[in-house]
Length: 262
Ligand code: UDP
Image (cartoon, helix red, strand yellow):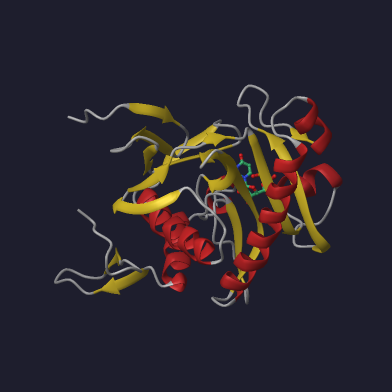
């Protein structure tokens, strides 16, 4: 029986109380949802892959001095994270036109944007995460102008770094969503990157074929969702194939020898 206290359950993740004050356990589920929960399914193994991909990306971002909530991986589906006060804004960074941008402005999917675009959405299931401006965010007190500046700078740095990281593996970073939180550190408020970065919240296209390697495969019923996520993990070096006696199954490997998967 799971006796841990559940702090929050979202569409793809559960947060449990952590082992020490100020920590939480982030558990990745296999649930896939789209269109504000109207489409829902289970993709067996997705949570395990997203845990590994997100761990890998957050570690690389920490090395770039981008503060994140990630502390360490606990097991195949869970990571220990810092508890933060989530800023109720989804920050979307776009390099290529896709998804809601195309619908809203009548653009053709795949059109290269002349510069990266930052957008903000207010996190509200009831309102289906409406697009908002900096003015709304500061006027309604969801974040203040200084924090928002820091968030925007951080989002653009993350975009530069991740675009390069993925391109090195033959993947185009089309767009992605970030969430940030606030923590107190030595009497100072700090903004840190929270949530996850995985094919659930990025659009990733194969650089040669433009094949989709992300949640659009689920949204648009393209099939091969798990295979695409596995391929992203494989290219990032966090998935290897082994040959057990009864055929080939993918297993997840750690990028850090000190990681324990207990
Ligand atoms: N996204 C997300 N969660 C959301 C909305 C968007 O992770 O609630 C991600 C999405 O996967 C994509 C980017 O943000 O990589 C831009 O999404 P878009 O605004 O085009 O909306 P969508 O097409 O997902 O409705």
